[in-house]
Amino acid sequence: MIRSILFPTDFSAVANSAFPLAVAIAAQFEATVHSIHISDGGDPHITETSRYEFPGLPTGASSVRVVQTIIPKGESDPAQVIMRDAEARGCDLIVMASHGRSDVGQFFLGRSVAEQVARDSKIPAIIARLHGPRRTTRPIDRFQRIVYATDLAENSKQILPLAASIAKRTKAKLEALCVFNEGDEEPADGGQATLERFFAEAGASESFGKIRRLHGGVGEAVVEHAGRHKADLVAITTALCSSGKAGITDTAEFILRNAPCPVLCVQP
Image (cartoon, rainbow, N blue to C red; front, side, top):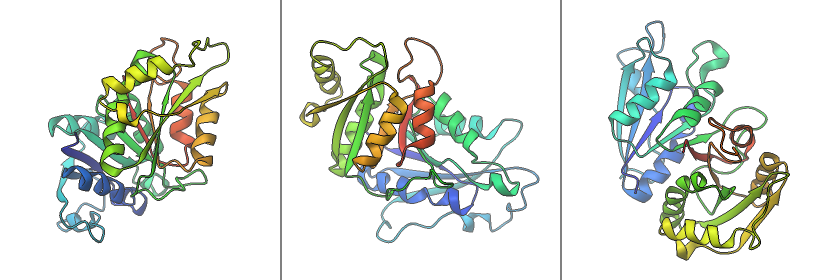
């Protein structure tokens, strides 16, 4: 269940363009969107009328409650402020763009900030790349197909309950994508029993269907699959294909940077 969503913005068009995604999810769950701007002492955009630079509600979304707040950055870096504020507000989800004003000197939502949130946040985050040649190509305010990528490791199931909940509320198809790196031993049943258990534990047995399997070059394969099958959201943990190692994996990082749609992720 999603009751509260944090949406960080630096007031740039790129950052604000992820707002319809936060609102679309909030509308399905009757959740509150906390729209925050982190002020820096030298930020010329902080004025008495700064609140008017927050994005407005899209047409037809007037029932969604939005709380707008400007908070000081202090001595912390923006990613830490975002994660701390999300925890303090009891947010269930963070939704943000991966680029903001970094190209014009008011650095806030640059790729490194979004990736740090994706890498370190214990609260699930949806990262949408909305700038550059590899930006999201799918409409971000609708969901028809959600791809859940798993290497069958126990920690890979931690993102599934939220992905399944979003799929159920939006009536999207939830697809299981079982991935194997070169040298990985594939179960005799291709992961069928493990995935059935994952979906049952997530309360999503009714969403479990045909399993798709990818072998080798997992990051590239997931990105290519998402593009070819017009996925609207890819759900992963940052430990995808970690082989037990700590930290975000190269596979998860590649998907975050290159997926043709927003990526839902969490640190397991």
